[in-house]
Amino acid sequence: MKRTSLRSKSWHRHGALLLAGLLLVAGAPARGAQVRVGTILQPPPPAEPPALDIRDNAIQLPIDRAIEVALQRNLGIVIQRYTRIQQRLSIIEALGLYDLNAVIDATARNQNQAVANQTQSPQSQNQVLNFNFQQRTPQGGIVSVGVDANRTKSSGSFQNIPSFYSSGLNFSFTQPLLRNYGRYANERSIIVAQVNSQLSRQDFALQVTTITQRVINAYWALVNAREQLVVAQQSLQLARDLHARNKIQVQVGTLAPLELTQSEAAIATREEGIIQATSAVGDAEDTLRQLFNLPPGPLWQTAIVPTSDPKTSERLTVNVDEALRIALAQRPELTSQQIQLEQAKRDAEYFRSQLKPALDLNVAYGYSGLDTAFGEAFNQIAGLNFRSWSAQLTFTYPIQNRTARAQSATANIAVDRFQALYDQERLVIETEVRRAARALDTAAKSIDAAVKAREFQEKNLDAEKKRYENGMSTSFQITQIQDQLTQARSGEVTAIVNYRTALAEYYRAVGRLLDQQGVVIDDPAEGDAISKRFSFSRAPLPGERR
Image (cartoon, rainbow, N blue to C red; front, side, top):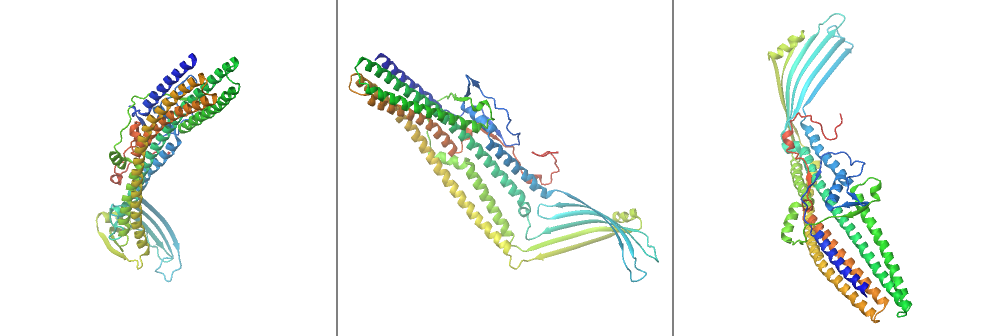
């Protein structure tokens, strides 16, 4: 009698402490320290294990450290980082459109041919050297400046013509006037590269958010598994206590031996529950280890003990309208759809301009020289003695114009498609926010209900024990009520952990999970790539090997 009463009080104290501790964890606010995740190219995760706090043969792991380790080592983030760098480099690649090109053309020619009369030269030699600079302009034109030198020598049986040199300084300019005219038509590849880079930034943020939530859920799943193991162990102890009491009563003849079979069956059933709960703990630990990308070794066999010490037990009050406003401004998925929609509109305008006919202007201006002396031929250029110019307009009109028409129609359809995708994503986000807010409220209420259920089951067990002591109950009935108490305690733990995961899901739904967990993405500003169109910088690039 005395022993049973003390154990009952111990269970009450344990349940109250467990509830208080988990409620504090469930309402934990964002921590003060920051976890910084960079998008710049970094070495692969080291082969050696991360620095973890190992005491008493177990990893003592707070949740902020779990998030930090995962964000530093998770392969999903490593892969997304490579993609982010590649998209940033694609902007520099597209800027190659404005690279200044230096073209050197050297030609040597020796020709022997049959002649019809003595005035023709059967043999001629010719050497040509051209040096040319070409530069594209923002409006789609091409400017070219070139210098050329030419040496020609002809000889025959009846005459010997000396060598002569020709030289030239040439300027040319080509400019589309209708189709392909304008900055967007010329710089579309750069803008597309910028758009893809912006999308990769949102994809990186989404990947970091996903990994952060997976770590949070895995962490609390481990908390739940370990507490469920404690509940299973306590349930086993209840069955053993009942069996020990039954043995005493059978020995003194106040209880039928059949009652021992009931209590032994209860012990066997609860031992099986401990085996399953222990396996669940191992599975939850492996999930965290996988997220940490731990190298093979002792850490895969070392137990993980969650140690987060929260600061407050306040529950979050949700304003759904405000949450929707924040989500529509913060969610990277919607931002990505908005970026793609805007680009589709620009493309539709571009392909509409491609319906125009082509009208190209070609202008050339130059000076030339000719003499038997190389230097004198160039002096004539300096003297501006012999000048020439030309102007040409080329008009091209495709009669069917099928390519441009189909491209324009496709671009118009793409605008409608991306608008529908944007509306769909907006609806999905609004639904997720409402569902997450509702789930958070439900989880909070479930905690209250689970606490009451556990308290009532504890009182019910105490009452049934008294009936049993007075011969008004059986081992079978006691075992049933013990099982009900175990289920109530298990439900209480699950409700508390569900609130914590519901809180993480709510912050994800409104796009604030990283802020709430103190995670900062370091993504160096790209600046205005268009302003660097004529840059001569040759700074080393990420991933460049020299």
